[in-house]
Amino acid sequence: GAGVSQSPRYKVAKRGQDVALRCDPISGHVSLFWYQQALGQGPEFLTYFQNEAQLDKSGLPSDRFFAERPEGSVSTLKIQRTQQEDSAVYLCAVQRGFGYTFGSGTRLTVV
Amino acid sequence: GESVGLHLPTLSVQEGDNSIINCAYSNSASDYFIWYKQESGKGPQFIIDIRSNMDKRQGQRVTVLLNKTVKHLSLQIAATQPGDSAVYFCAETPNSNSGYALNFGKGTSLLVTP
Image (cartoon, rainbow over all chains, first blue to last red; front, side):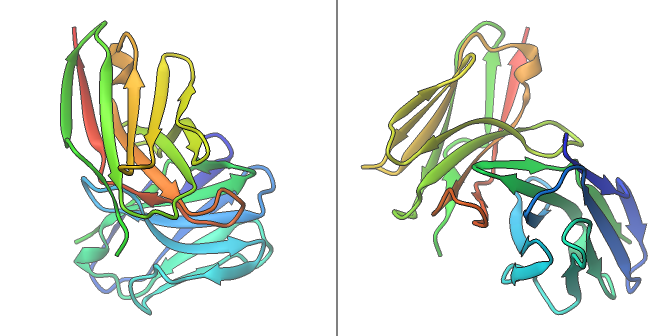
């Protein structure tokens, strides 16, 4: 969506491979969220950043998942040793005031 | 745990008819509710929102109704068009201020037939 660019749009990874997914807010947003959306399901919260600080990572499913936002703008979600259950769309969202704006997501398929 | 869910997974309506999509939530502390539309291959797109101190809010062709007594939310789309075909999600958060994550329901697939 407008205001949030995610790359790559699609990623196929072999099981056990590490992946990095990028979120680039086009204009400055303080709050940034990552969500995981399994096929046919609603998005589920993974982690939240306020500027460069990761204030909530309670939704990360395992220690294979790691997110960072070192300069308070671009964020990267990294998944180590990918497994088939990691296959999903990973959405990034930014918040300004009451509004949340979502990117188009990265579809990750682990084979 | 607390959850947000939808009554119907799919809804098929004829073009020009009105559509009603329902959502139940269980968190009595929910303060802010949003309806999203998601088309294939895209992220959720904001449709309309409502705060817990309101029971109705209208937008262009859409109305959201909130019944806090029974923890029920609905989205009404007037004169449904083929372009309205998508999956619709309700989402809630306990606080509309910055930094609170949204809790999504599973979604309803709306199919508009000519």
